[in-house]
Image 1: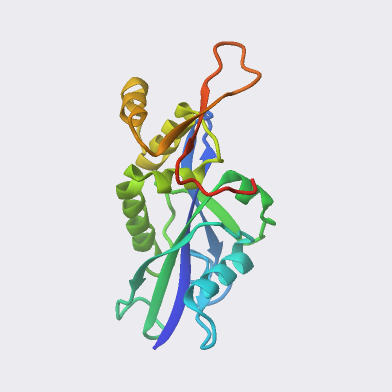
Image 2: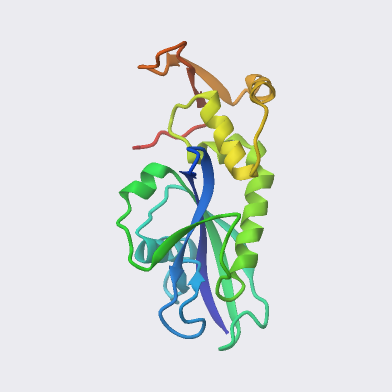
Length: 214
């Protein structure tokens, strides 16, 4: 039996209408099995490397991404996952800000796809992404998930955009504002967006938001 690590990466990108949507990258397989198919970034687990370190390393080597948020998602170990023998995959997920994607060196064999419209992936990777997407949508009620896609400060409209992108549907703006207005995790910074022609929107931050270098 072999042990591998893989990572599901989610990031927000603007669609053709300028609205944020959820995307995830895959790596083109250059050898058998599943030659020429898209697969999750990952690799084999060395005997002398910790799981999270291996996930971070293989993610950087295959995609150029080095996200600040990396969490173990699930272990997949079906007996027929690979045609070459038993492979157990410890899967992580990473939530990546647009600024982190921009800083990454583009890799030749990497392509991003809309998370809800994926091609047929190698092995059981469609199932893995579906599981990760379900978990992400379930956890969107927690502030520590939403802020992983945002900068240190943001508007209510930007926060709503994250929720809409992850959930895959539009939300009523007034209802959303009312629902988050009473959250103890949301702090009014007292600042507003500068350079706007009309009434500038307020800037907020999360109470538990770690400082970033973005």
